[in-house]
Length: 382
Ligand SMILES: Nc1ncnc2c1ncn2[C@@H]1O[C@H](COP(=O)(O)OP(=O)(O)OP(=O)(O)O)[C@@H](O)[C@H]1O
Ligand SMILES: [Mg+2]
Image 1 (spheres, rainbow, N blue to C red):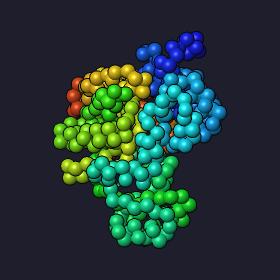
Image 2: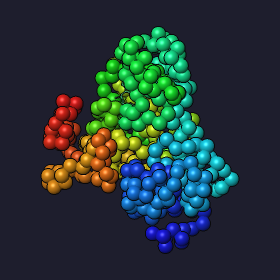
Image 3: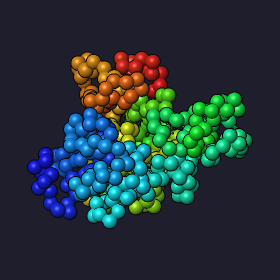
Image 4: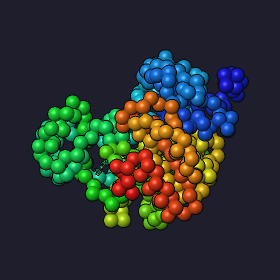
């Protein structure tokens, strides 16, 4: 690997530097190797999912020396999660030839729920009613203006439903303020959605666009548990693609972008966007002609995008806490296991399984069977 890296053509982005070495980065590397791409990660630990398959620098995400080294050794820099420092990355790459893709303006918008909502508003993408909350008085004003129930969220650093509280009464609001009030917050109306979907798209350097079919997503306690795709709804898909196209164009985006939507009464309400590959697109590894990971690395490396055509009906179940015993899982037909190589920990995403079937009926049956054996408490979710 290091031999190839030394031999990389000057100026050719054959090494992709990635800030963050989680499972998303690992799957990017695994998708990029067949294309002859190399990867260099930066993460706080030397034993990340990505470090198990690629060279990794160990240091803080804000460490100027580490970021400068990443920039020096890479043709392009990307990231596998959004809670990293935009100013530090901007500073480390200013004046150098290295690109950052997706662009920092997309990262900045997505990592602050308030700027994300404002961007949705600016592009006329329907979203929840919301208000910034920086004081107890502002919270009570927001409750009055937006109403109950609602969800109080930290503006930054949230993932897997962390940093959120559902507010049903004024007493809930006071308790949540006590627990969360130390940081800037956002209050938004609770959407009694019929279900949730996400739309994932890629944009190349030359503006080429590729859209995956809609995914239907089931969350439990704030964590994505199951995805089924393609989710066939022509009108919803058309609307979702219009919204993604607006975002991709306005941000002059390069790479994969995901937007999560609530669906209520046949209409989309944008929840949030992720300027990266997304958990609801893991099914594309086996379930689409080109995976979201491959299309992301193609886009950031300046290569043409691959076809997003589905290869059947895919279902994905996240493995949470610990990877279950592998033999019974792998003995099932059409099951693909992805073990991220992480230490077990309650609530942690440690892997996923995907099934790809000839029909949606068969896929749903397989998903039911999988859930019943892995997480019987969730069998009612589908
Ligand atoms: N306003 C809302 N109304 C109804 N449900 C909500 C609302 N906000 C969040 N939820 C539920 O909680 C889930 C997680 O919320 P959200 O996407 O904001 O969190 P997150 O921590 O950023 O998650 P991740 O980044 O892992 O997707 C949503 O997918 C949805 O199921
Ligand atoms: Mg979310």
